Image (cartoon, rainbow, N blue to C red; front, side, top):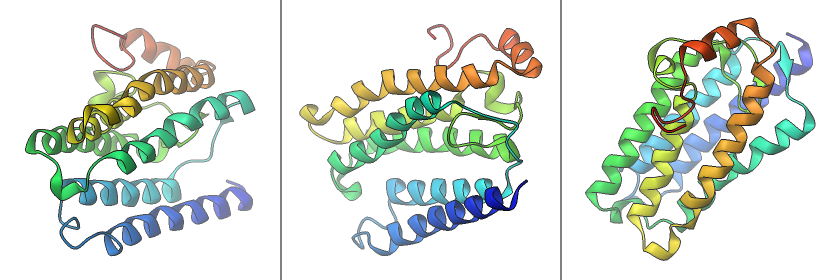
Length: 200
């Protein structure tokens, strides 16, 4: 791994860890111990750790592929902004958020050193949730977005409706990068579904 890539990873890891700490520090006291706030902090901590630990990239996506992945990253922040304060979420929304967070965290930890935020080839993971669908972390994120919609008024549900095509665009961009790997092609034959078994 080049010195420049190491420095970039360190800066990104420190940013993610600071988002975890600041998110908890600046949250309303009644929101700090909620499933939502703790789940978001856990995701930031795991992402920061994986960025610092990940393998060097074998192949980076094109400028178009990187740009195609960005909107799916941003829509989560919009959905959380529009959702009510975490302590006001109904129990059903909290349970959906918890399920999505657990799936996303399990998938990211299983991905380990192959983790990448933007489309890049670092390695192929096939075990755990990756034996069910090819992009389980994104399925977890979609469940978290769905919970934001369930927590608030129906008029604020548009981010989850917009998120689905954006995540699909991100998946397609990522799979174009991965398709140059023989291991990926073999894995794609074993695990047919990208996000939801029986649907896509």
